[in-house]
Length: 231
Ligand SMILES: Nc1ncnc2c1ncn2[C@@H]1O[C@H](COP(=O)(O)OP(=O)(O)O)[C@@H](O)[C@H]1O
Ligand SMILES: [Mg+2]
Image (cartoon, rainbow, N blue to C red; front, side, top):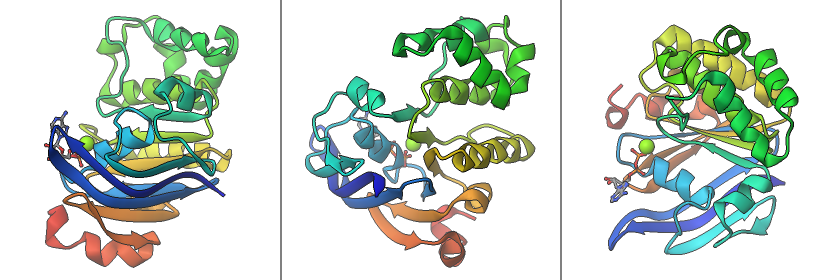
């Protein structure tokens, strides 16, 4: 069973096509990496998956059911959680306020705090601090803690590593691997590939709105080292 499936997705902004028949599967309890250069259509594909951007054609399936046109809030209720590029936290609110805001989903504040501290002990130390004053890595931890507060079936991460030092990226991906071991499926988008390939079960490379290659990370390493990723 696939937690998420994109079938033949075409998408456009105004009349400009940016996705041209994208197929992507996230099997249950797996980590899937969607990789590709800037402007390839990665974020658009994620926004289509999360119901934030309507495809011009093609189907989005969540747990085997077609969900085209279903509202983002309803998809969230069905277990899909998107952490957008730029993390989507509220910089002027404290860590506590950012976390407790998620209680609108029905999870109690105590459970939300407990889940967050268990995975990210650093957030306990920063609990009363304003989110905007956290380090980049801590902000990403807060974003993930917010997403995981609702116990999603699928966590979607857009450019987890953006702007972070390699050692912090590695630390975050260890947490991603841990979350995956707990049974949460993960779809992660990255522009630069190396760390994510270490935790991904499957990977796909998107170039100019088309999936150029898909397979096991080991099968894709050569393609990734080619010029279009600038590596
Ligand atoms: N809101 C938007 N309006 C118009 N064009 C956009 C918008 N967002 C993205 N695009 C264009 O769509 C293409 C794919 O963008 P995006 O999905 O953000 O790529 P990626 O995440 O891989 O960098 C790019 O050419 C980008 O310029
Ligand atoms: Mg993007």
